[in-house]
Image (cartoon, rainbow, N blue to C red; front, side, top):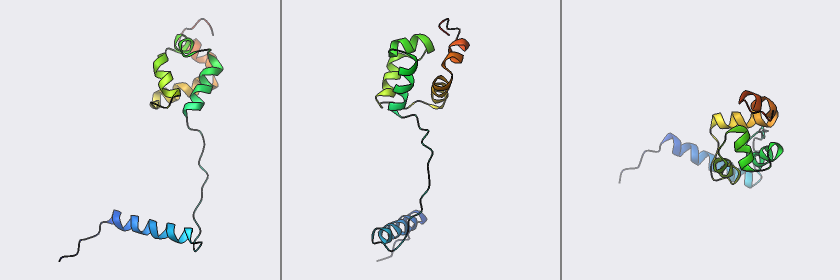
Length: 107
């Protein structure tokens, strides 16, 4: 029977499991790093919306984002694309500027 050739991915996975096993047995230290917590989570999106609008319909009137789309983001059913993330971040920091840019008289 001919031995199967292992792929690089297979070898990397095997090595990762060996390192994990060593860490779990207390034989090795694991590398750590700090990750920026600047993600737009469903909870954060809801906080942004609530800080500028009473409801998703009100947010839609002010910023043009469909209420159902915003609800899907807030419930975690959908993730905003890069452009929507940028808009939400600007709304979070400068809602009046977005209102002015959109010609919203409530600015």
